[in-house]
Image (cartoon, rainbow, N blue to C red; front, side, top):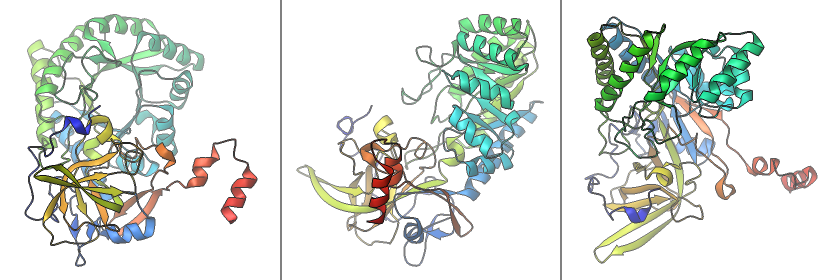
Amino acid sequence: MSTTSDRPAVPEWLTQPHDANALVEAVWPEGAVRDDAGAIVFGGVSAAELAERFGTPLYVVDEDLVRARAREVLTAFRDAAARHGGTARVYYAGKALLTTDVVRWVTAEGLGVDVASGGELAVALAAGADPARLGLHGNNKLPSEISRAVRVGVGSIVIDSLVEIERIAAEAESQGRVQTVLIRVNSGVHAETHDFLATAHEDQKFGFALTDAEAAVARIRELPWLRFAGLHCHIGSQIFGTAGFAESAARVVELHARLREGGDVPLLNLGGGFGIAYTSKDDPTPIAKLADGIVAAVGRECESRGIPMPELAFEPGRTIVGRAGVTLYRVGTVKPVRVSDDLERLYVSVDGGMSDNARTALYGADYSARIASRRSDSAPALTRVVGRHCEAGDIVVSDEYLPGDVEPGDLVAVAATGAYCFSLASNYNYLTRPPVVAVSAGTARLIVRGEDENDLLARDLGVAPASRTSEESA
């Protein structure tokens, strides 16, 4: 875990802007502008209106941007594969942001959905997703989750251990069904990312080492209730560039070629992990360039071995929803803190925190923020946006420049929170989780209601229903 003490007082990448109202184009949602009153407008709806109607903290997701990005990603990979005489499919990685509406958006645009738990599977099914276009992940799938996945006809289950081979086969046999499976392998490529986000080196919980994979596949092929469809490999998250993907592809294609000697291996799933811009320092690779680079690497490896390129699959999540989301907060207090003899920082406390955005505390993630309710002519001031939890590490935006006149009552928007904020939300300190609102072409609608204190008390069996009712009426 990264802490504030690990950071310089002012990171090298952070430069004082000429205008602390300006929105960095690559970071904020496409089309985000300030209206005549100075409020930021998302999807045609002003931050001031959103806060008035739905309260704060508030997750805001631009439906049109999610749909457009889903189409763009699918087109990029399909076109790249077609240039090499192949085909590609795309699954949306539901762990990034999953609601029934989000599932409907991405499936309507031609994507399948990758789920990683029984709960995520339930959401996808409740949204009406075709089970055949779902993939189930997880390093410790519960027997009940395996049973349901087989029963509803999930398109593929990604096997993560030898134990799961036997569990899935036994369940499929009990239901009289043949279940399609992939195995997850670790290519040994350690993507250049945060250690907690890199998932392809061997000393971690996911998947099989390349040296163990052939024995696992041999066992799958022995079992009549399992159909082996191919390999799955995911090298990490928030990755820029194609070098890591290319090296990983070379190693996985070598295994793919060996497995073809024993039977069909129709699919190669190379996961996701494509990065987005959270601040001005980030320079994500355009998705078309990523697709071209990754598919070309697979094509070269297959050609050098004289084998056809398998159907390819990819599982992007953050790159589809990350930039489309913002979080709105209300400022509660502002406190100047003397960091050194020549440096002062404003601590801006908002009405949310690590319970609605855990990524800063978990990964030392950086974010961008702006006053969203007005425009200011004040000079930029070094700022840290912090939450209201009883934790020194409760930081939402560690390093930013906001107008120096930021004050209680202002709305602050934090950009690029569409991925892994709602998903990781908690009730720490018994704060309620915020609602999620979708904006589209000037309209806003609630797609996940926010919690209230009754929700917090509902599972506590020490609270009598009569007491709860009397409090409500008080």
